[in-house]
Image (tube, rainbow, N blue to C red; front, side, top):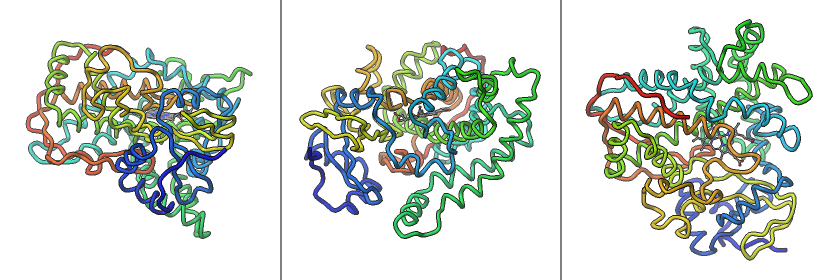
Length: 443
Ligand code: HEM
């Protein structure tokens, strides 16, 4: 069985195109080869097949035999740790998912509403008036604080301050494109392993997390706490065992790395799209004034469609996969190209237009909208992320008049594993209103 054709240029050129002009690269592959094509990136021994037809994506995500692509563990395990839910496979992965899903259930999110609103408000208060600044780093500050307080449940101000500083540093290191380049050089040329250096730098944050875990285990009020760490400390696997300290540390770092940059980037893109689309912005403001949130949900779905933050979420085939006319053999690395899946005119007429209305009539076909991946590895934090986005956007629009600081559209840039706004979405706050009483938000 031969793999589908793909770009004729050498792997180095394909890699450079993917790194620096990912949308142009994907679009040209689609125009030449359709929904299914093979790409070759340097550092990878075999080609990767990209798919975007919902039927093929459904088959990929629903087969339990498919495993993780090898690249995921290679880059992430040294930081996330060997017990990370994002990296385990098979029965070990499923048992972690079962234990970790209940705290992320949609209904539970209500417990975090006032905390998220408080974090967002404090951040908004600190923004300059009538002077441009990029909103992406400000959203990163919000999502880091939300994870520290709602997920880790840290309350001690001194520990909060130290963790904030140390983890922020670690997040910059892991998001840096230099890290990927150095990883590649280490792999191909035997240069010093940059991950080892990163691991040493995270040791101090690890100590603080372990202190938090030890205190939480000893807390007689554990059952009354609603942060996610407390629920994980109390939870038991099916065999009655609890997660050990090392594993709790791995899951906390996993939740941080999986949930912080992604949600901040999705927020920045949503603001960017709203500022460039006055019609949807006016409709959203009117709805929020009236206390509704259907249109807000549609705005978020549409922003995640048009600007999917995580562009690839692949699998290594455990059994043959049919993708259009191709039969891909076991062992092939296959990934949905999420931006291509989200911009197929068959599923989304006028696919490049920002039209939240498309999501008002009902959910799209499941595997035509996959910003959170799918199947047994679908994002654990999807409900949390969408809830957090709703609260932050609602606070932002209630408190601020904003406009874009640049007229040129934001280009999509790759930032580590994400599609991020190249300039961080510069904005200008033209007016700020005082806080007012809020209606609770449905989870
Ligand atoms: C808009 C924000 C987010 C986006 C776009 C996003 C996207 C994704 C994607 C694409 C995957 C991979 C799914 C796959 O391989 O099929 C994933 C996995 C995961 N995400 Fe998210 N994510 C977001 C927010 C969060 C948040 C807030 C958390 C937790 C606090 C989180 C925790 C996880 C975890 C633990 C996994 C691994 C699941 C598994 O392997 O079983 N994510 N996410």
